[in-house]
Length: 411
Image 1 (cartoon, rainbow, N blue to C red):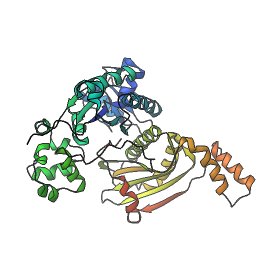
Image 2 (image 1 turned 90 degrees about the vertical axis):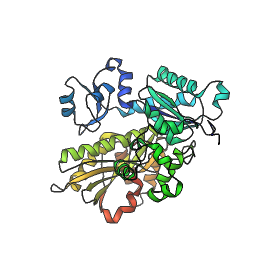
Image 3 (image 1 turned 45 degrees about the vertical axis):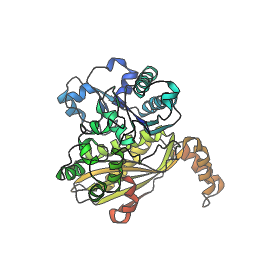
Image 4 (image 1 turned 180 degrees about the vertical axis):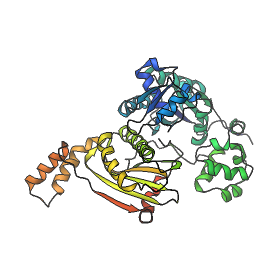
C-alpha cells in the first residue's frame, strides 16, 4: 500500500533555550558565553545557554554549584514580563504565516500547515526555513521546527536537531525517522514508563509503533495508546485554534528527596515563577493560590491562600507563600515534590469589574466601610489572608488536575 506523504501537516515550533535567548536579545553581548537565568528568590537555574549546558549546568541547579562548573558564568535574574512580551511577538510572526496557530506555552506552539504549500508555492522545508528566519529577524529568537502529520511526531522532530533546526518527517519517512528516536525521547514517557517498555524489548519509538493494537492496548494506558496511534500517523490530538479561557494554572516539580527547607522553598519559588510566566502570557490575574508539599510516602499537605486583590506580581504572592510554607513544612519530614495552583483567575481587562463586584457582595458592612476596605485592598494598604490546610486524603480529587500534559512543557 502506498503511504501518502502528507495528509494532516502540522509544524511544532519550539524556541531554543527561551529564557536565556530572551536575555541575549536584550543584551547581545551574552551570546556565545556561559550564562544562566536564575529565580529571584530561592535562587536556582531556570534556563541556561548551550555553552553553559555543555559544561554540565542543569536546570534546577543552585548558582554556587553552577559557578563551580563554570567559574565565569553570568547569572541573570528572571524577568517574566519581558519574556511574555517576546513570546507575544513570536506568535505574531507565526500568525503571519497562518491564523491557525495553537499557543501551547510561552515558547512553543503548533501551526496548521494544510494548504500552505499551494498558497506559498513552496515545499514544507522551505516554509519551515522561512518561518525560522522571519522569527529570528523580527524577534531575535532562535527556534527549532519540526513538521509531520501528527503533533507528537512534529514535537519529536523539532527537538531532533536543536538548536536552530528544521526537521521534516512525512508519511513515507516516518518509520525510518522513528528508528532513530529513543523511546525515552517520546513526549509523555518518563523514566518509569521507559523502563517498563524496555522490559518488553521496546527501545526505539519505532519499536512501539510496530506493536499491534492489542499488544499496545494491553501495556499502555489511554494516553499511551494515543501516542501509539500518533506514532503510526493517525492524528489523535487535533489543533486547538480557539483559545479557551484558562480555568487553572498549575506547576509542579519532583526532585531527590530532601528535608532542607531552603532547598524545598526554592523549588516552590521555581513553581511560582513558571506559573506566573504562564499567567502573564495569558494576560490574566490571580487571587486564589494553593501550594502543596508531597513527602516520600506520597502524602500531600497543602494550603490555600486568598490574596487581597487580583495580581500578577511575584512579590504579592511570594510573601504569602512563605507564610504558608512555614506552616506546612515539618522539620523532620522528607519531601520529594512541590506544587502550586492558581485557581481564581481572571483576564486583566476584567480587573475593575471584579473589584466593584467584591464591594457589592460584601453585605456584612456598611457601604462606606465596604468601599473603604476595598480601596485599602486595591492600593495595598491592608492585607487579609485566609489560609486553610487540607490533607492529601481530603483533596486527592482537587489535585488530579496537576497531571503533566506532554503536548506542552512543564515550565
